[in-house]
Image (cartoon, each protein chain N blue to C red):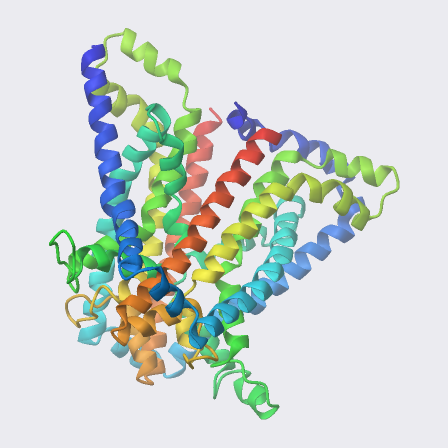
Length: 270
Length: 284
């Protein structure tokens, strides 16, 4: 019995690891290999071109606007979901997940139909000199849409688990709602919040589909890092595409390390 | 270990808090108000614009756009490949989750951390990554670029974590005494898996596979480079919609988008009921 179960255990382990290797590890390894095939200097040159630098800063700017806004929304939504009682709560709960399920192309199209020429708000905004689509605000809106649920989904279970007895104690002792939130609730949910922020950041940096519909892809202006990868690939600049990809992959690995660390911290504190 | 905590958590504090809930009502309603407004502005109103646009031209035109030969072929391929990917994910995801929970080997925590890579890696990079290994300049001599196989691989890559991450926690909490009892009564490993483990994992596998399915149906970034976008062959619905937007056929794009949107809503609500079903089993 023990020898057969050991054999089957090894077989399962082998299948699982082989599956992960073929699908995940080897392809990502090959990208790094292809990137550094022609030396580090070539890579450095290709990620410091003006277009690449402007793409990097645009991505950074969009992320820095979208993620904090969604962090605030996420905490409020989690409070509403866990502590609030209101009609339609179940519907609200389901609708928050929509951005997970909706195709990024549909997201892009939706923004186009609201803010584009002939859209619900587009003409009025354009007449007043505000360009949303094919400009930075459109990219920001697309990114906010895509990353909307992450913080709420990470904070809500933590909030549910800690209960509200401490919050009530604070309220009984005369703390205002804001004091209670800052001193009691926020410290309790901080790891869930950080985890959600890390996930949103990774998603914001990596968003491609929705952004590619609304950005207009103007080089040096509305081109994010992921759009730069696509453009370089389409222009047969494979080395350049790999270099920009490697940069994004490094960001992804940093994110992964961050997630692992936060997870560990969470387990230690609970 | 800390993993057992969430199961018993929610009910007790909730009922204790009910008596004094009214006092904190202002803060609660602020949260409800602001978050509902934000959700409406960012998500619901734009999506409503898509639906309105699709039906503006009348039901007949929506029907014509959705049933044009190219749209039907793209939608059909998207559905078939997504179902295939979800099924394969259910099998391999359960297997990987099993190995990560029950097996012990060196480097396991590294493997466990790597599972989330597809969530962290931008989809366009995922596409390029697969193209580098399984494309025209493949170092291992496998070239599947611009075929249906490539589309399936891209989808398998981006949906890899869903089933694993939904099965893992259930497997960790699964009571091993049942399995030991079955083994002592002479059940084989296969029987134990089929009669005891699998039924317990079923809701988690289903909801993970459903998430993978809905992600696969809408996926764009990882496919756009790999598929070659060949109509009637490797063209998926999202890429088809994208091409319609690019060629200024917004009505056609909106019509296909409404189909995708309806599909995501159905899957979302399906997952809800699977989760409720799983939670109901817990209470016995």
